[in-house]
Image (cartoon, rainbow, N blue to C red; front, top):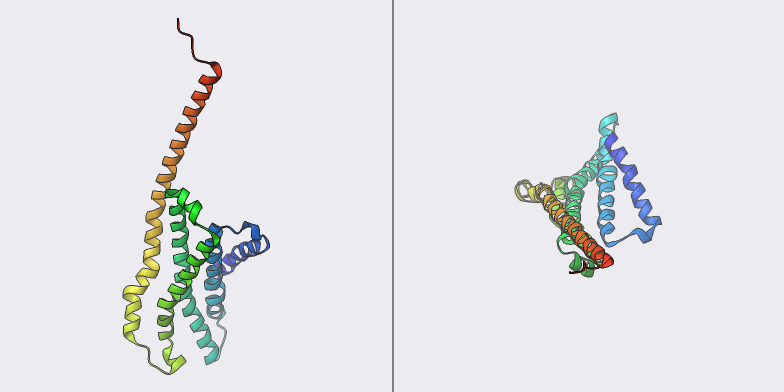
Length: 209
């Protein structure tokens, strides 16, 4: 619970900072804003009520307990997937910028970033929200939950939503570091050659005897 409180302030501060300084919103920071929103949702709106009730052993009626449980499931099953894939989007954005800088500057825009982030929210909700609702289908709709849907989440959706983003980010960053280091070395070499040519031209060619 302490962690949830501590994460709220930096996330809220950065969101407020972008809200008051709109000129700082760039195509890249659109991904950061999407991540900040999902962080606040999952930590401070969806899971915090459950953590407070459990920590302080607050008595509650059935409706309140059910609402808190559904909210917790929504945060853990759905919004957490948005958080994971937001990190994937940031990593993919950095790969694009590092490996194809010219194409990145020409094609990437706030609109592109907005569409990409919106697609993440839509796709994650499409595949995980029915599973989250299935866990509480009896209380919500009077229909028993289907084990086949729970198995689908355990065997397919869960690994894709949680394991794939971690593997993708872990594999991608060494490649980005390698490419950035290579470009930095090439830039230093070019600067050395250019400096040598400039000095030669400034002092003139040596006379031949």
